[in-house]
Structures are given as structure tokens and as C-alpha cells.
Image 1 (tube, rainbow, N blue to C red):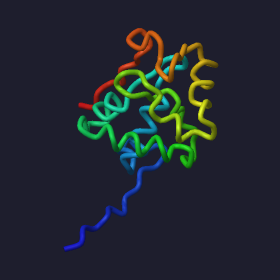
Image 2: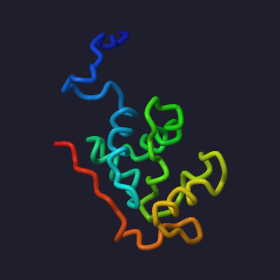
Image 3: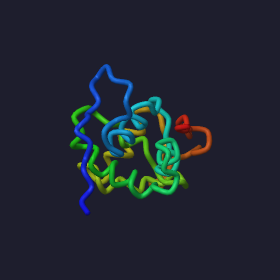
Image 4: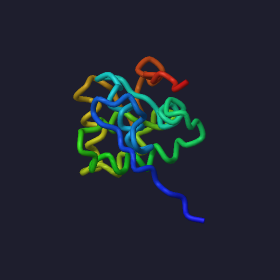
Amino acid sequence: MAMQKSSRTPTKNSKEEPASFFETVYAIVRKIPRGRITTYGAIAEAAGTRLSARMVGWAMNAAGHAPVRVPAHRVVNRNGMLTGRQHFATPTLMQELLEQEGVKVENDQVVEFEKLFWAPPVKS
């Protein structure tokens, strides 16, 4: 039995949830303050799907195609490693973007990870 998609799509002024998981992830990532970082898992939890950190990674891989800019460079793994760096235009771009915001990176890992970590509000 095939599942039918809802024909309803949220409008700009609508208070409905975003239409897709990726859009939900992008909305959370856009809230990360400049000079701060968060993790795939924290975003997944904030999106209401705590066990979907890998899906957040897929969303970050596709972020370059989002119609509104997504600061994907601010998303790192649970240890502060720049695991998504290979998905940027150059191997060093993720680090360069973080450093432009004052985030120090050594050996592909955020220095002072705990201090710079931003916890997105969890969806209730």
C-alpha cells in the first residue's frame, strides 16, 4: 500500500512545522550563533529525533543546495572533530570559516569544544 503525501505546504506566515527533516535541520543550524559550534546529535535531539545524528549529517552534506544559506561549518561531531570537512569546496574551508569566526581548530578538532558548544533548544 503506497502512502500518500500531504498536499499541504507551509507558507512563510504559517506556524506549521517545516515540510521536511532537512528543512527542520537547516532552521536549527541557522540559529547557531557566530563563533559557536554544535553537534549532529544535538541537532537531531532538537529536531525531535534523538537517534538520527547520521541523517543530520546527510542534511549537512546537502546544505550547499539549500535556497537559504546554512552555516554548516558550525556543525561538528560529538568530540569536536571536523568530520564534515571533506564535503566543503576545499579540504580546509570548514576550518577557515570557523577561524574567521574566532573558533580555534587544531588537527581538525575544535579547541575549547565544551566552551564553544551551543545546545539548540529541544523540541517538545
